[in-house]
Image (cartoon, rainbow, N blue to C red):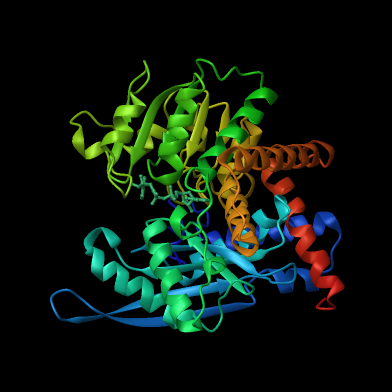
Length: 426
Ligand code: NAD
């Protein structure tokens, strides 16, 4: 997760691990390449709005605990802001800001009528009861209700939040507004206006990005050796889709360790045994560390857990030919440069994990229309958008002779900058 203080945000190699600083660095480069003046960077380097809330919650033992939460709205020139809510002990204001900026970039890359938003609460849902989580989810919505809404800012799930939490949040918002508001939040259960295909959308999108990247490197997915860090919503479904497409998933991990088998892991078995927080390795004796997992000999590596996993300290040891970032911010800027210099094709987070927000957009459209699509329809539309976006970013990287991350930022930032200019903001 992001770290704020200068001391704690520097790796042993001296590189800065603050994800807000690194995203600002790439935004500046992208705007310079595109020829925008300094004032555009001044506008886009930070969110327009960040709300800091304190939420008192009655715990099951009768005591009251006060939780800290945030909601950041990066830029709403294009349309309402949109982005997930993360429940995690390491959430920081700086991280939430960076995540909201990445959401703006994603919306720009896949061409959705949104700006970026993000929320987070400092808490550990693994240590909380079902009812405590319900009270916290409802308390958060009451605290931020003035600045969110179906045409203002639309939340969604992220790390350690799920469709049940979205359902409580939607119910609370509908009570406050006194009308049913399914378009307030996405990632809901199907019966409450969720979209078919939303649960697996991020993993589907990442699978498409792996497929397109493999084509560029002439790697056949059939038999390709794949390593995935993280076995939650993104990582576990991705493992399933990869093994269904004939690839060999030789390594997976969670927060507590990693599993490795050169012959390929039994993904259906692991899916069956993982808990709702994406934990499965605690059931096994023979585990390796997350660092060892990242350095395994493989064709395709997908970080699908947390930030700052591939750094200047281990980028030289990565053996994969393709790295596709399902997680937000898993590779530092120094590591990006090292991987590029070594000829590794890196598909950046702002492109690779945009499948989630794309189907969240489909969910919002369906809620607004009151008309619901089939899973085939959702998947066909998702594929069209993701493949077109990959080609656009890949072409930009080739013609402008920049790495895929900078190319993705150039594509992502342009729409926001143009919308802000037409509105007369810059
Ligand atoms: P999740 O909570 O469902 O799963 C997270 C997984 O990462 C779990 O297996 C957990 O054990 C593991 N993990 C946590 N801390 C770890 C650590 N320090 N080292 C190794 N593993 C660790 O979360 P998710 O929804 O799958 O999200 C994973 C990443 O993908 C995040 O960066 C998230 O922002 C990004 N993402 C998710 C979506 C989505 O729709 N779910 C969309 C876009 C991006």
